[in-house]
Length: 330
Ligand code: AVJ
Image 1: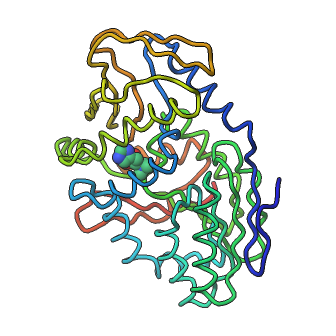
Image 2: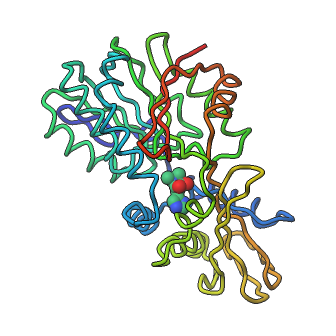
């Protein structure tokens, strides 16, 4: 691991290198040559994509962020009291907005020692770290620049006090069921007996409410969806015309997930120069860019069970739209 920052109370090391572009290249080669085209949603989040996502979080239709914040604000003190946590590990920490609520509760409880954010964006980590050490006296930030699908083993060891490992925002829903259980199992392995997983999950509800959240009236989500094509154009020297694709979002009742797709408006051939690849789209052909699973408590409990975890506390917002689960090993 490469040390990218080491000054008073802030350490940031990176697992990423120039070969990161290979990951996108491999995913694009694999995903766009399948019989049903598909790309993993993690590639949405370049600077523009992260900015669009932050705009989504402010949209009237996009309820998950607000619902989760409501739960955090309401139960943070209780979560810290029951866990006694002095450390927070956050996977996919972004701007650390949600972490701040938990860190505040840890400070009030007098347990706060360390925040360990893991994110692909070095800049986001550095900005968040600087703000937080200013805000919380004595707080140590031990950041890891990395991808939690590959770099969980780089998370620093616990320093003695119990820790919370958080995966918030409903991100677990972006993984298909098998991958989801594998990730939960890997997170379980990070937990000592006194540690807890804190998992944010969006809940099954009226499909119209879910679909509106993923197809807002301002078209921000549509732009976010098309951003993956901009990312491929820039990183892999491709010639997608993003406007030639329509944004689609629908709730799949059988799988209990919402899907986002991009539908080719007309037949087109896209050249991806870096891969030496030509990709044909038939008129109306769809490319799946994201699934976002919506959970019920029993289904989540069975996922936990399969991953070696046990649900200990279940917190929801007043309208039962979103849940935060506290889970322990075994
Ligand atoms: C990154 C999991 C919070 O699945 O709801 C928002 C991403 N996609 N609108 C989600 C997203 C479309 C989001 N999370």
